[in-house]
Image (tube, rainbow, N blue to C red; front, side, top):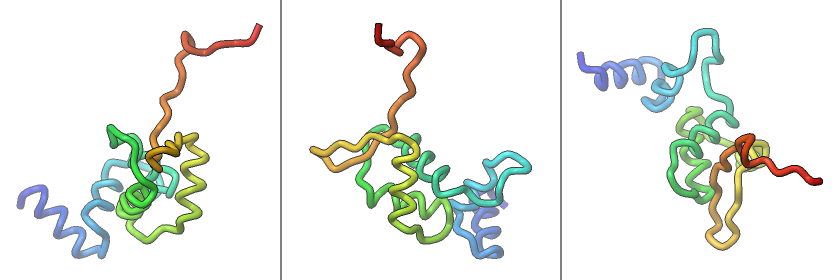
Length: 107
């Protein structure tokens, strides 16, 4: 049985989506069975090479978590992750952490 066919078989047997099984399979042993909403939102942002509209983030995060998500929970996750909102494009993106060389202190 090929890997993809095996994933589909497990998905059918468990009632989970193939994406959920992929996400869970990639989690370290001892981790939670499912991704948290915040982890799913972070994963969506980190996979994207460009900024995304809220609806796309919420849809992809719901796929990773394997259930419908509350918009307020997705919004709270974006805020908690310090995601950047582009008002001109109405999109969200991940903000890279500053390196020590980039940190500016006030004199």
